[in-house]
Image 1 (tube, helix red, strand yellow):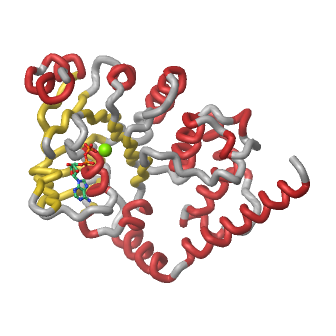
Image 2 (tube, rainbow, N blue to C red):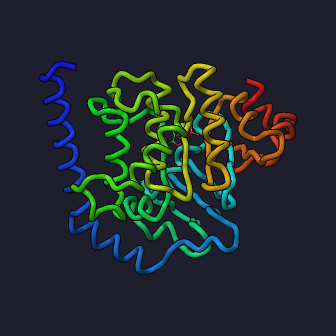
Image 3 (cartoon, rainbow, N blue to C red):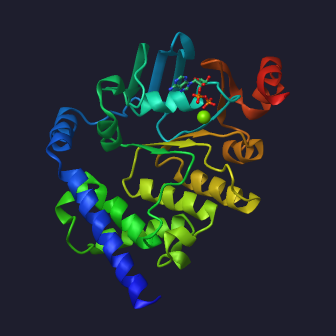
Length: 293
Ligand SMILES: Nc1ncnc2c1ncn2[C@@H]1O[C@H](COP(=O)(O)OP(=O)(O)O)[C@@H](O)[C@H]1O
Ligand SMILES: [Mg+2]
């Protein structure tokens, strides 16, 4: 790397640090953060991570979600399938506070009413979301991306400008290994393959140790090998995190469900079928609206 490039990289890192610092210390967010954390920690004692009941979302009279009900257990890996327009992304928008439903209830654990929280508050209480397109800081290294994700976490706020502690370094190392990017730690993120960028973004989410991870079409555009490795990654997260994975790739869904987990089929904003992949694949209604196309 030339000195010029290194200087540019350092400047970019400083700029991002300043931006993140501004974001995490702004009074508005600070106030809401305090409210959430003092008020309630999610209670997972009943084994339920996420509970949606009778959720309806209308856009100009069109029901993107129509009395949708869904429960995901603590540590569960739940795959959601369904045709385009079924409401899968809208469901994630409701869970993360991006879209407010017209009716219904949504809770995280048995006690947190998601419909009363704002987007940033929902992220703070432990719900992480991966959008379809990777959004990493292209000009920073893989390591720096993870470092930023760690320091953007409010719980680590005191150490925003300090050196990483041993524990934090270990955590970054662990995540690098998990996302198969340890050999690429010092590479510029912009030079990674599409699949590697997706893993890096998942790693950035994991730095904040979310209890629930929402992944919208995570393997779209990945090679077969990357897809397989992504399935392995998700399987290794299962148990410690609850995962909701929206995906069209049936081979991937098959690998994730291991012949024994529940799959949910969405259609026209409601649950059309739920059960083992083999069962929903044999379900006539499912074949008609989705798989048989
Ligand atoms: N902001 C919006 N305004 C109007 N219609 C929307 C909006 N977001 C989603 N929709 C519509 O809601 C339906 C469900 O969309 P979406 O949740 O993106 O489906 P999926 O992710 O299952 O493909 C689609 O018909 C889509 O056009
Ligand atoms: Mg979608």
